[in-house]
Image (cartoon, rainbow, N blue to C red; front, top):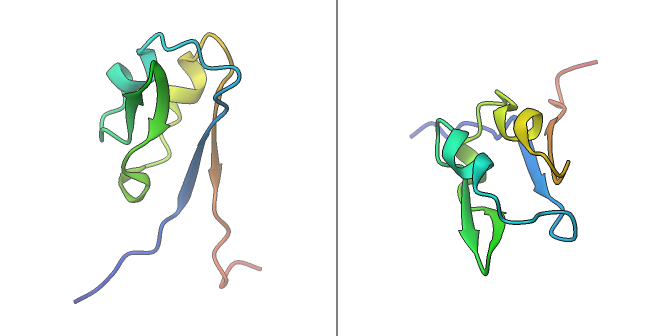
Length: 73
């Protein structure tokens, strides 16, 4: 069984999130979900790095960053 390494990290700043649901609706891989009227990362391994959640978040509450590969130098 081959396990793919996660390539992207999604972070939600709960202090900024207003619970508008845009990120949840736009994510093509259902990485984000809602809990207590705030977005959270439900499936981090599914992230493709498309950054739709980060780009369209009106509150700048989401960041998507690339996880550096140990072989990248």
